[in-house]
Amino acid sequence: MTTVQPATRPANPRFSSGPCAKPPTFSLDRLSGAALGRSHRAAIGKDKLKAAIEGTRELLGIPADYRIGIVPASDTGAVEMALWNLLGARGVEMLAWESFGAGWVTDVVKQLKLDAVVKTAGYGEIVDLASVDFDRDVVFTWNGTTSGVRVPDGDWIAADRTGLTICDATSAAFAQDLPWDKLDVTTFSWQKVLGGEAAHGMLVLSPRAVERLESHTPAWPLPKIFRLTKAGKLIEGIFTGATINTPSMLAVEDYLVALDWARSVGGVAGLIARADANAQAIHDFCAARDWIDNLATDPATRSNTSVCLKFTDPAITDPAVFAKAVAKRLEAENVALDIGAYRDAPPGLRIWCGGTVETADVVALLPWIDWAYRAEIAAQAEAA
Image 1 (cartoon, rainbow, N blue to C red):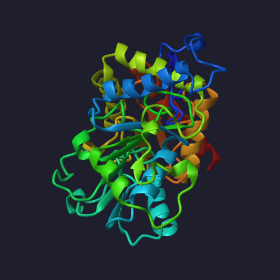
Image 2 (tube, rainbow, N blue to C red; image 1 turned 45 degrees about the vertical axis):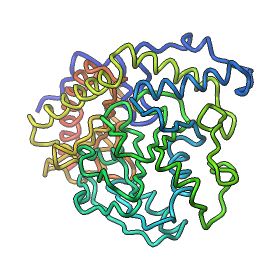
Image 3 (cartoon, helix red, strand yellow; image 1 turned 30 degrees about the vertical axis):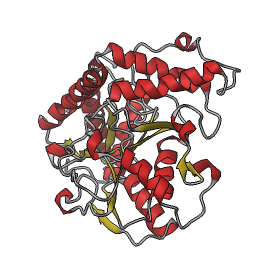
Image 4 (tube, rainbow, N blue to C red; image 1 turned 180 degrees about the vertical axis):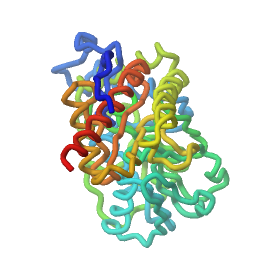
């Protein structure tokens, strides 16, 4: 069994699933126009925040009557704001097939103490989408970042629903086609597909969601940082750039630069194509080998961003130890950083394939996974 190292290395070894790789053209001097030391309430700050909001609308094709807000605490903060403000008016159905979706179940059932219908699936699987009751509010992740499983499309979402759809789309926005007419609340963060900096989340509300906010008062107290209404009316300033807490103008500038780069590669269509090409290279690699496979069992639900893999060689005595050793070898060689499976997920690898990753780097990585696997099998045999 040969363990000769490949001749070519990825130019960028950053395959982390969050924070994710910066755009290929990124350099710190691109941020020289940041409004540092200026109030975000000054004209320059307001203009940049508005540009971030409207640039998001333009690129994602978000309807003009949807509100887009920049909120604190990344995607987590945006989801929590939605759950705490909107739920409780009617029944709720929670869908989960990975760790973050499971976290939203915990919040709704144990913190908000709602009598929710909970539907879960194991890592690599997805729930029965045909069984979802849209007379209830439905909470789900579009793309399971830690399981590599995504919903195949929006066809399963009822157009005539009476409940709201609340969608955590943090590793799907800018990489997968989001049908806005099917989504009432959508959240994501800057640090996923566009490789932005941390701490800022995006909250997108449909007119139906705004109507709910203005007609429903939650039964529980809301911290100031969560409040989206005042005296029964939407706080419109949140959706024009008057953020709830002080934003980082450096991070805002970085997001604006990322939006410009996204336009340069063909917008969302170009970003989807880049992610698809990256993921397909890995799918083809797995199809040609009998010792590694995609964690997602159904090709129709395989993610094109967070591609999760499992080792299937029966000779592997301890999958968790083996997977960590492979990831460690790849990091030691500086060919792949931060690609171990998420701590709650089955042992394996997780390779980020969003649009900021170059396909040439994915292609260069794959022979190294071959090498690391063979080297670790040899080490295991020697230890035995």
